[in-house]
Image (cartoon, rainbow over all chains, first blue to last red; front, side):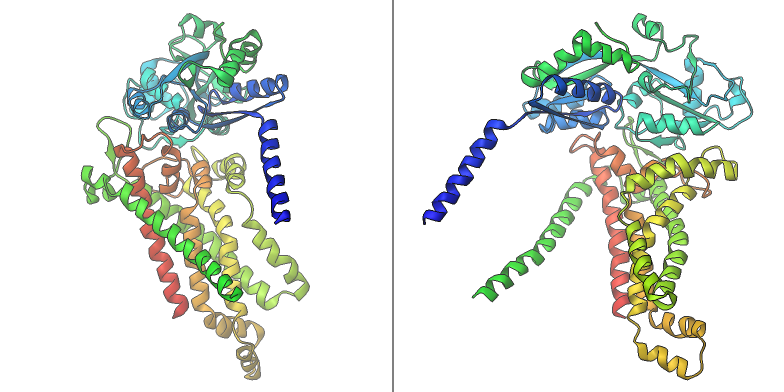
Length: 270
Length: 282
């Protein structure tokens, strides 16, 4: 009996002790476009606050928002505004998603560096993605077949591209479907006839961004609105950001956080 | 008393897997069947277009079924000769010391995470295939088949090896006594005696390959069209579910359609597993 009591006492003290030292935890999931910002910001934030542990996952904007609605994450990263369908779903579950714009991003249309085509109009991009045009020759390039690379439907980049560049039209069925910005960049870099689209933050010398409607996707032209394929990036929280989520979002909006945004190739909002 | 307790404990462990299986089956049917109120079974299985998020949507999964089958059959072309070959070598020819090294090595292949295979395929094998065959793009059915074949290899090899080792020594000795050479003994006595186990190994390898998700998502290219050549990007059923499930709002047609795909996949693997079972039991 005594032994049992001691054991119970030990267990209780362990439990209480654990409760005292438990870290404050924050989980984020969603857009692979926002992912690098969230990861870098999380690292720096955890350096400043050793008691905080932040876990950041990708998955795509839709995945993040679905997780926020299910209550499994504190912040949903999204590269598109929340959809009415999702808002309705959230309301049913008693969750009020509020979006904070943490950065701006352009969607760069990219080709292989060896491709002589340096400029496309929105109409040409649409014709390529819907399958009206099959050869680079038709837009002033070589006689190569165009390899059209698109994203999965969970991608916010796809949603925005579909709306801004395709006007809601269907992507040709034989387009390649890849599951992340990085996968698109890697595949375009290794495929001479490819065309793809990625967030500005994923641009590298391995791929070539083309001018869209005569404008190169530079930060200045994303801010001014000259570059047509641009969008805000969001962090969604349940209600106005408060508590640890609020602290974290404020950190990203602070000069230090916005410097991270800029370093990663995105456009600061402040 | 204690024996009984242990017996019941183990019984509940064993029945737990039945509970899980039943739970999964019920969920699949419950979430998958509603799609057939929107689309007929025929249109779902034989529709040529998969545009689940457009308005109006198209829920035809023929390209996805064919994509899965092509990639899987391709994987078997890689895994079966290599797997059965290595099983024959390991159990019949290899020096015992070499066998001690080889067998765990083959099994080690199974422990490499699929995302690593996927990365390897995307960064190394894809571009190689593209240059070698002068294709527009390297992420093709062919590329995915090679990688999946490597992943199914340990399954095929280890089950085939078990089957071959289980052939009684008397059979071999009788064969030698009749004056047969080693090679004749292997091909004419041992392998036929182990054939049901080898066929089961092939079928389980098939199950391993058709269910694989991450690798095909990364390597097969993901084009939802009916494949006309192995050197063309394809999309499998598993990759579609993995890529789209996160976005599909719960209870929507898209969501039910994805479960519908899972249901089709479930019947395919169930069928092949029953077949393997039947063959093993004779």
